[in-house]
Image (cartoon, rainbow, N blue to C red; front, side, top):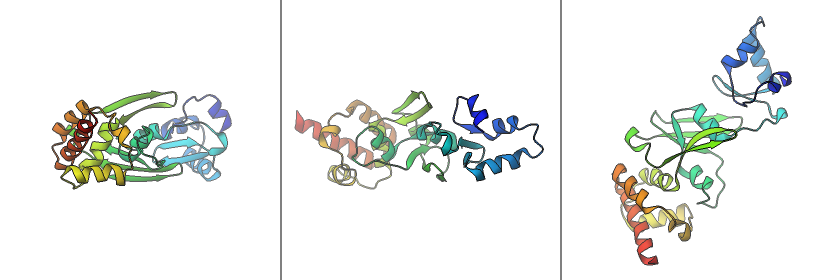
Length: 209
């Protein structure tokens, strides 16, 4: 396994690629199973592997999320934590997708996917390019709207309680949000809870000025 990794740059290994390396092996699939049992390979999902922990090959959970189930984009609490909006470190990678809801438990963590209609999907997404691969993630504004979209509150007071008490976001961080993007998101989402969120954030900005 170590010899293989010396000639492979990517930590994300597919079944097809691995089988091609063992094409001369009489029982190539059994070989893969043995590598998983020994810890040389981590089985992430059908068709996708990572090198075992002892090889210490760096990888990105954000990049993995798009490979596990897609098309998808990181959002909700994980995106807010990534952007430094909430105090807690979020371990579960939470994503939006326009396929049915799905959860995956893997050797490197848990990945949750929530359905969002296609017309709501792209507004506020950002493409991230990193040394470990590329991925889509919601902006701070979109991550908040995605969360609000799943809530049932209908007024500013409830929206503010959600932001301050449930998510524990500092008011100074809320005042830095792009209200233009929030307006755009609210028009697209057309949900009472997202309108309440926008009204609450605009009220905060009005009080500041």
